[in-house]
Image (cartoon, rainbow, N blue to C red; front, side, top):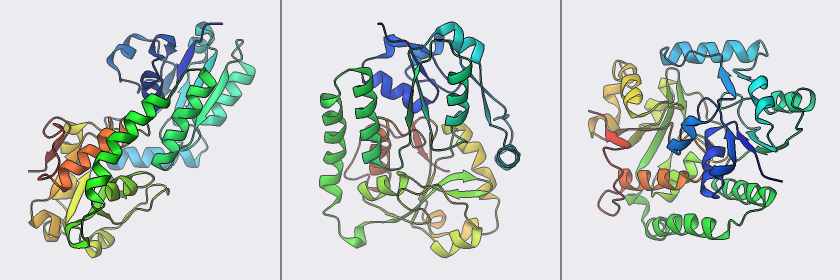
Length: 306
């Protein structure tokens, strides 16, 4: 039987692509935008949020929906039924990132006549991303060994250089995953910072991204700040960074004084637990140790905040 796959989150679409199965993808989420050819596929989800609002209003809307037990995203079950999928790839990690696993499970059980197999991803660390790629490949019956070896080789190329750095040559780093209110980078972000030769602050490996206070940021006083808001591209990140620059504590931070504040395309890279986390590691290595690493990402997907 031919595979008919629907992906309900961008990282899953990128896993499908790296496994060579993009031709079997018949539907996508409204946020799936890579590789470019998926743009022509039917959209199977709708957001109940207005992502054009300022950061504080988006966060407030998210909290209101979650507190009222209303999903942030809605499944277009009529579209999914028409597509007759054999497999749906979703996630069970973050109700802010994509349609909740329970919503997908309910829809498949009661509304989708093809009764597709649900593949649910839940990575919190890089090794769990590799495990997800392996599991998706196994379920969809395609090889993944070469793909994983190539990705892991790129990681090892960086780690083999950074693991010899002295403590003095490892800058302290705060990753900001939201600007108003402040949120630190969690899950795989602290791990990537360590691999890239930095010391992550205000975020713990394998744990969800924490809300931060300005006092906590001031006390941490990192040498480097990297801004990577969830769901925002480089230009939108630049816009949302203005609220940080207006805060009275901002100009007192060491990273600001030293000109070590960077903006990134968090949407395409850091926020997606898929194969492009390797690109994210390369970006961090370029930012933290520019004399040692140059992968050609500067200005394209990261810039100095001027």
